[in-house]
Image (cartoon, rainbow, N blue to C red; front, top):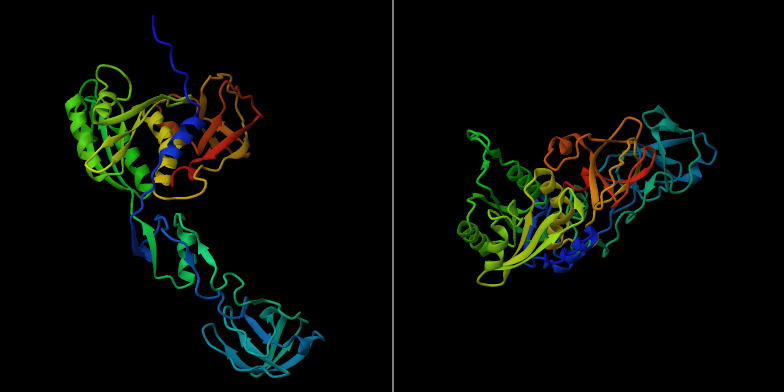
Length: 410
């Protein structure tokens, strides 16, 4: 009598387990802000100054006293010219200052009139053809950032926006968590590298290129152990080597239970392993565990060998796990959008399907015709994934949950 088959885990169950198991790195370093793209802040950053540091103009035009221009046609004496980066003199009654975007508002002025509403009638005279309100076109000191405020919390993954914000308050360096060290290797005697002759029954190792690029996008420090022979001894040796200096080991292929699939017994011999059947398509098999080393353990994730399965399993499970290991705090799940399906999908599967789709010219979604787990062209053609619940058929016009690749590939 065969043992009862364990029920497949839901996608959410597997994710919850991974998130709960993650141990973020704690080692920190100080790096130049110019070199901190993609890094994760180790400590909150506080501004020591106001931004803007002083009242300044949003427009090219004339700084004035609003009371002098109440008539909407006042002629004023131009007393000075104030480019950005220069400090003007006090503005007296009946005077205007020629001023340029970003320049400090001179003392005495309380409004700016844009140059399109002014007419210079002499080198030192201007007609103001607008009655401004006090404060018009003025950015106030501290309007964006106030001194003493937290501008970036700990656990923030730094993008171009955050780096610009840090620079705007004068931060030349930022404290970040060290890069996550990830080892990768690939199993399968059938695998060959591009550039090598392709023997009968062999295939090119596309997963090596896909997974390495995905890890590079996440800012990991990668060690590639290449293609490992299909033997238990070689697999164990590579696991031991990989565990010594790395936080996470990722493999592709060999996570089934066939005679030539050595990942399961190798990880069990060198540590501990959970083999999951996840209710996801494409994907399903995912191995998670830890490999022993002299001090502590390295995490292990074994992905399926089919290229689309490996790609999508990485996006759904490995990406959020890595972000958490890197110290990213808060929600690490991708944003999803409700969109219209412009196709029929009657093949309701009992697993949670992730269908490759593309946005069409009318704002709906088209489906790639072949959703097979080995069809890499679908990942290049598509703009993202439709997250289709188990046993759910789709009819044209239905609203579906769409996750763009732009949410998953960084």
